[in-house]
Length: 102
Image (cartoon, rainbow, N blue to C red; front, side, top):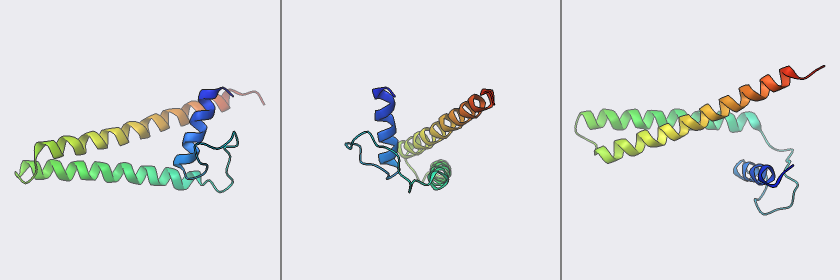
């Protein structure tokens, strides 16, 4: 495993609450719940999208500043891009597994 992959694994583990980023090479944690992390990410994306829609609706009625609308839309866009990147990686991993010989 190269150093970039190790650092990425440590960062993902730290983000998921598994391992502190400055620990040794052991990154695996048996308490890691992938489905809960995925559900939280999807929920976060939905909430960011709803917040952006609310800000846009308030801007139409004149109750919100344009800066707030742009900020909310940008945050929703980042969340959506993150989910799309994850989806693309999951599909790529699935396709790689399917190409493996039995």
